[in-house]
Length: 242
Ligand SMILES: [Zn+2]
Image (cartoon, rainbow, N blue to C red; front, side, top):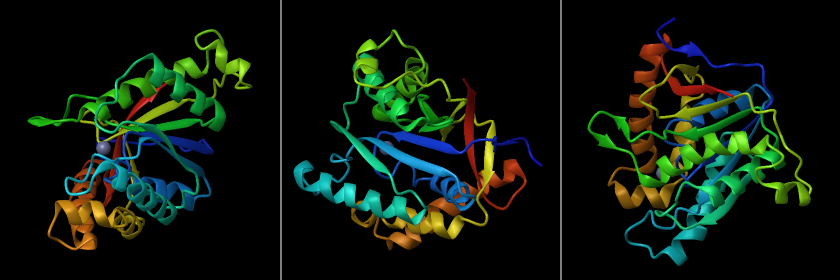
């Protein structure tokens, strides 16, 4: 076993909250496939519809297309519930309105594990993380506490959403401060298919076939995680206990 610890396994339901369609597929979906294969319930909540993600397609055309690709890619890894909050892509702000919406979702879905993407400024030294990812990651961590507190957003209780204090961990994928990992050796092919399902998006940013692009990216990243975890491939997470 390498330097990364095994992720906790004593949970049944996870809610992944990320900024954009494709955020889960750039690494975390292999872990999701492993979990759903073990019979766990994993659901996705996208803060935006990713409508600013393709330079050649205007947002109004792009949003439904990216939603459809996200539904396809989620289904490949055993995720049937995919919701969208419809924040505007590219300009998400961390803060009270987003925390309220996320706390509301956490109360509705009642997960034990919450997954999100790297909230830090960097992926690794010299690579800047996007504003949306930083805003969502920070707000997810705050919203987990909000979800458990009756008095921070009392209007949620008025809407029938009782506090949920059952979240035990937040796992941040793609973090430069990774502490834990999931063996994705057996689910690598599923993860590749899941990323390749973002066909329009990938075709706009690469000349490679979507499958070849996805294989190249995910095997490279998975091998880096695997080297630190002692498996062929692994998805690494920064785990925060709640
Ligand atoms: Zn993103």
